[in-house]
Length: 205
Image 1 (cartoon, rainbow, N blue to C red):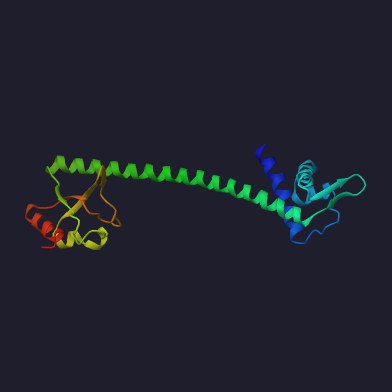
Image 2 (image 1 turned 180 degrees about the vertical axis):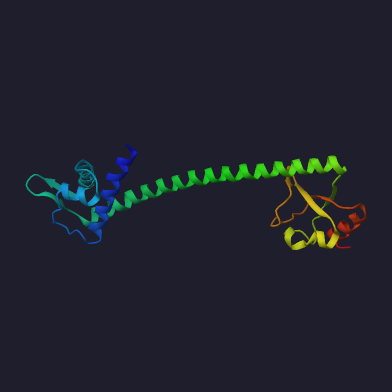
């Protein structure tokens, strides 16, 4: 039912465009329903519904003697403006629905990867009894606003960041594009002899 409704509305809109563009002139007769149905590859009933919409909008006149006659370019333009905006809103709603589906799919994938990271971290802790160290980013720290990828922390300290705590949020295995904020709590792992390297690096000592 929705497909049929969409077809006859789209055909009416197309005819209105053809009138505004000058392809179909005022006071000229539209081709018969059978010819239009062949042109648009739909049934004569669908064309009848399209014409009914245009007639109700004052775009065409329909009579037994004259048939379908184009009445007004202005009304055709008004019909386009009214119905194109509705069509656009419908398209936007459809796009939003698709984006929501995509967002859920991405969130599921993120959660799956996070769980794998947690499981891996749990296995590592069981195997080597690794306990992460913590360091807080103070307000005036030079790394505030810096992206992790630009800091090259492993090369400069021998330490690896495994998570960032920000308020009630914990970002496990943070993205290299992640920016550091003031008061972030950095969780990192390293050999005991490298701990001071991390503190010296963060606090720029």
